Image (cartoon, rainbow, N blue to C red; front, side, top):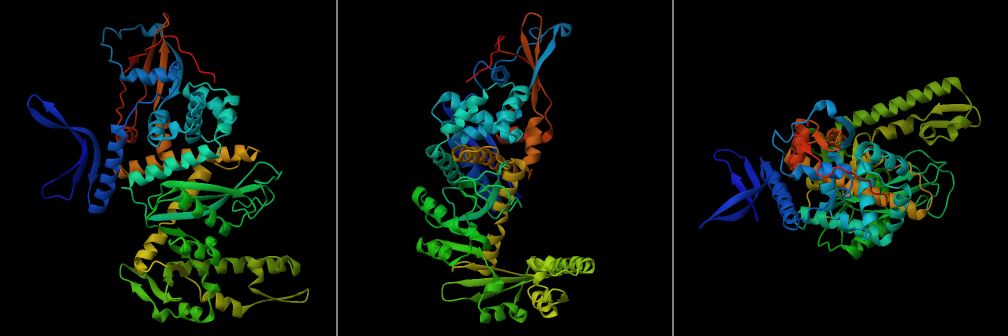
Length: 558
């Protein structure tokens, strides 16, 4: 079995296929095992071939895992699809004798279930019952992220799967530190395999997750909250993703941890567990401190970090504000940049963007208008002294005299539209450095997906062990979501995780029973996008009704 690239005469189109050689008598022919997609340029072709190699590897080691317990009705509906279809005479049933017994969502388990197994998550827990429950809870989280209790109800009502809530909690207790590391090993190894054994950029960021509780412990602690939940305990979670947005690791910290202190533990973890030849860390200014930069350099890592321009030395700030020294981007007339050497090994790349400058000026004007309205309503200084956003624009004398600080306003205006990054990567041009830094949106988008699409917060668990287990299974769900999103974008078209989820939820099976107890399955109609998602995963979807292979369904109660 190998990956084949077929070119089209007089066209940039290149078709990527997985083929195998089969013998037909004395001749050897090539049979297409999987059609991967069409690439229109070399960059797209490289990604497509890497994905094809990844799929080929999985096909060669495939072991057809079951999606549900063998006695479950929903599993029977899925399993029966592969059975020989009945002819017209065998399907000749009296419709008056049929009644719908159940309607089950099958798209989530069929598609995300396959991704789940390909990523290796099916082997995390050794206990078969706990392993099965973990998979179901992850699928439920992807379909509709709610509490574990609500997930159990949803699995029974919408998926035809019945599990015990206490079994869910026992499963979570099995997600210990060893299992959590195994989960991240699966994520990292799959990503490395997917991208041709090469991960050269790691994007890093951290965010806070709050609890529906006001009780602190050694793990849940009050701290600076990015969700503005300052009176509720939280944890801080850091996340690493590739430049394609594929997650490779995470780590949780007590909620009072300063964001800048999260990089070194992650760095030590990366060095201990992963073999990385050369990698560039990309992060925002939240992790910018001397200790972190020194740690990265001692580990011989290159980095691209968001800079705090206003905190630079006076002579550097003068260079930053000298816009005459900036060169215009050839492809973008609104942006110009300058490169400033901080020393022999470090550069500060600063850009000035006209649109960003207008926005900065607008935001400041908006804040000033709001401030003036407040000044008209209240002359009490105390209302403004405690608000730094207002205080920096004001001259306050005594308890009653407040005036605008015109000098400060002019000083602020000088920085409109400016943004900078600090790097020790000598081999990259300023343009390349900026392109890499722009990729940081991947991890920011990842947090948006985990917080909003997968609703990893608020957290309803109380013990540190359960909280970490919750984060681990949420990370599994996130890995599945991101991998499918990447493959759909590469092989079909760009679709958001929410759009993919909606397509798969609509793929259902109606299970009908006649008076004799025989059951039949009528698959729902799939949309164009739904069919393409199945095609991306190498699965066929048919709306042809079929007979259920077992007439006595039972539910598994771990």
